[in-house]
Length: 339
Ligand code: AMP
Ligand code: MG
Image 1 (tube, rainbow, N blue to C red):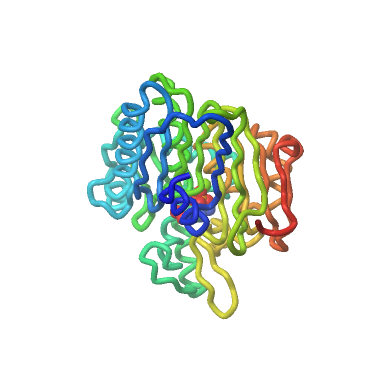
Image 2: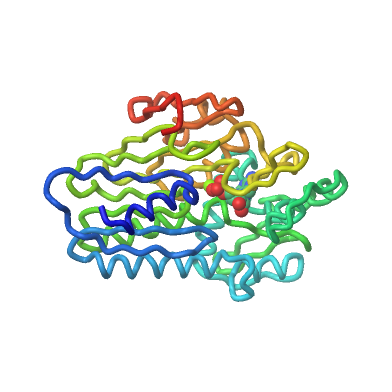
């Protein structure tokens, strides 16, 4: 292993939500086409193997940048920025991708009774998660922001390709679904190239594509949510999407209380039922949005609803006790201590 690779792996311990280990044995494998870019507020790491790896890498990076350009709510050029700016004023013409992500986000919002809500932005603003000026808002501020949270207020007109938020002050934030959605689009793109294997990690949202070179399984580390190292391993075969949401990704501590970036749309306060949850899925957008929704809803809901969504879940509750859904028990190894 080169020293650059080792440095990369160490960096992951601090940055990424979950760690990736690819154990290769025997003869050296082909060098992947690889890239590390900063996009969607996170580090994206791509490794692609096969005859078309260079072209596939270029296409994947371009998909990440294009979708980031659509969902970046700070860029005046982005669809999401324009929709938010014109909330309560007029509909905005947007790309097909924007409509596609929003439709999927609304679908998950309905299926989770609004635990996932893409109109969460006003709450993120008052808690300081948008400008990184973290603060605990007053109950009045929370009450006022809660009135603006309603995925039912997103009006999509597919004939005109427009999106409209009904009320002034409402705002869309796709941080809980955009990375998983992008992985779906990358997977689709890889299918059109001659690719034998790929591993794409977008800040804790991972796509394993086909099998790793020289191995029949992927071994994905589950990050220790309270400190360094990993607390377990997920073993998966072939193409899968693995998404983690945790209270250690973005948070602040005030008077001994931890406030994280995932907000319960019913209470207007950061969710605190669990510490982290990882969803194993056949769809990127689904795993990503569900990890956020399950984080809000907690352990019982996640375990009871895993099969309904055809996903597996593994996580740690507020006492750091691990929980695993029955359908992926044989894929998970949990360590008693961080390694
Ligand atoms: P993730 O790491 O996938 O769980 O996404 C967390 C991000 O989703 C946050 O940083 C916010 O941008 C956004 N978010 C926070 N709370 C919610 C929520 N209840 N529903 C939808 N998105 C949310
Ligand atoms: Mg998510």
